[in-house]
Figure: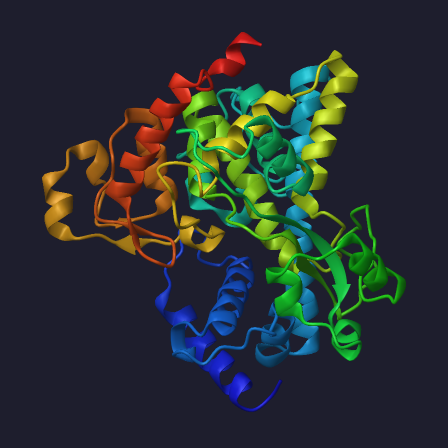
Length: 422
């Protein structure tokens, strides 16, 4: 994969990197992974500077190979792994502090507040400026952890199957509804290609258990189930996280899922969920990917540890399936998009005329992120206009109208805030 691909990747990376404004620390080393993942998506679909020339068999592995040196690529992947580890350690420490009442090391400077910061450097996790101390502190640790745990379960093939079984493959209005799912696996990209397998087919077509076992037997797929230290010497430049589809069908709108958490459990739950959704994205560049993904590992770890400490799980099957059902793209009204982590934190310019027509709460400047807009909707019910979501540019006002309709459906079905009764 050379020549035209290399030229277009480097052109797209430069143009995109110069044009995109993210609401993260200016000196953040975590900008690069988001750019590489975005360019990888452009290459697969022919977007951006690829201008319709697509490379469906490409992978972020190829983007890194084209844009970065081997040494730089390894640094980026290890730094990504470190931030995932920092997030996991923060969540695990918060569980102990909340349910075990031991060490209070997360409450910095004795001000009695909990900040979403890495334990070792006291900076916002993933360098998100929405999580700066002057912007956010955790007011409800239990629901913060619930949000993190629920998002750690929502991409699981097992839990998506359980959701469809519970709701009998029907949407809010009783009509047939479909949902796709798959799993993330550590794959040796080089070996996978040498053995003649298609990355595009693995991601888009249903993969049987028999074929999956064949890939494992031949060594194309690895089965790493435990996270490794970011400084581990076991680094293999060819092993990356690869999505393997098990069932064809529409997935979940992450925006809808996070807003469901915010509306049901509060803003802290939204932020907890947002963190684990970010882990899911950054895991795609992890130096040490694991079977099922780091997000699923976090979800399982939090739930089992709280059960050990209290005798009850942090989240129930009922709560997990409610979330997945509400956020399903194919539920009604349908939602055709899902924002990426980069899009959640990308500052976008809104129509100045629309901005002037809003009240002070919803105005907050011409540049806005989807995360900031979602916060306002959760806290006030106000719908920030003039933004577009997803690659398709879905209108923000129309999106919030759909969310309101879905919440009304959920209320009719006894799902909205019903976890408080169990």
